[in-house]
Image 1 (cartoon, rainbow, N blue to C red):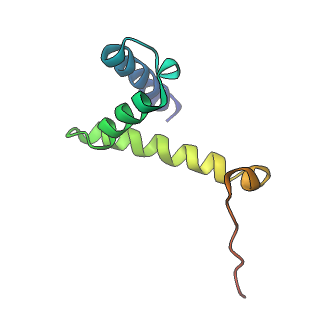
Image 2 (image 1 turned 90 degrees about the vertical axis):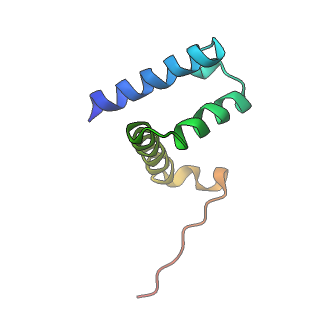
Length: 81
């Protein structure tokens, strides 16, 4: 799984270099958004799956850290028992 994740991140950086002549971290915010939107809407299922896998891992990593909740405006819902 880690190898697949690394390959997808390398692909993402390569796609940025091909499309915008810069690495992904070096792109402007609107360029990043355009590239990610293209992956989200890709006609190739493997790219959409890779994007959603990355998106899920990112969100799980973020929302799994209670210390960042105030910074991102996330409020944990209380469950009634």
